[in-house]
Figure 1: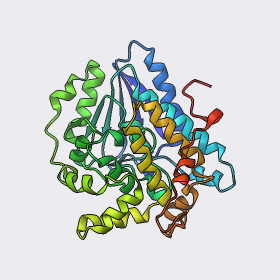
Figure 2: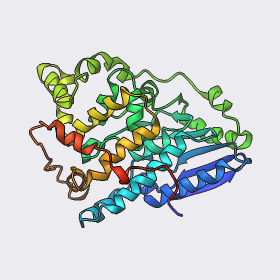
Figure 3: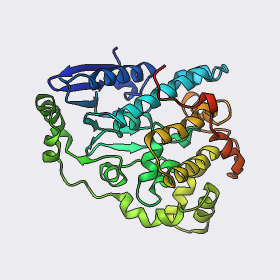
Length: 346
């Protein structure tokens, strides 16, 4: 497959995203290929670890390829999207639960679906070009691919902030927020990957790691905790409106651009995951409840139309006054019964 290069080099299973012109956006076929390789290598004693990297310097993976989702969804066919998310989430869980070290090198943009393959392994590497984010609310989705779990575990109220605003994290931010483990200058990555393949030993990463740059998010923590602690998105918006400062003004501007239903559901999801004994599978199950309904009952198709297809940047969201009834959020997160996400092989 021209979009992805999967092979074994020495002791390493290598997965390189090669869809550089599309910022290595993840297609359905790429998801299936990754999952199949991971299944094979888990049983292969010659493979000591797995390495994810990507072609080009602009992006590790700028998200999922949603063109096909939009094309099928606008025709009333929601099954393709549901199948895509189901199989993608299974692959995300496999990475998180993998019995061998999984190393990812996250240059440039790592967004949405890129977080799902790049931020669930055991050794997540960032450098000076790294920009990580979960911008799904902007197109009528919610942070998914297991990202909701990472958000729920982030310090203080960073999860609510990052999940609703899509704020782009630098290398220092990503380490601080728990989306990455090591800061290593990017000019060392090629030699490190060679060493991993030769030795099958992740100890070379700890030797090469340097102190992460200062995190702007850390400096913003007090403001974030003070403004994003509300029980609902409406509470957060109310708090932001009472403040007269640049931070609150910027947050308000961004939040009001996103889908109100997505913003409200994101806050609820993070609260549920934070307040329970959460696993990756339970987070993915909760995400799938939303994405299963996202095209039929949510704002996804309108968000994709406005931001990606027509690019008029004027989506006609539901609940445009920002007041989202609690029942609307509950309906998006109701259990799916027989359609629930299963992690058993078909």
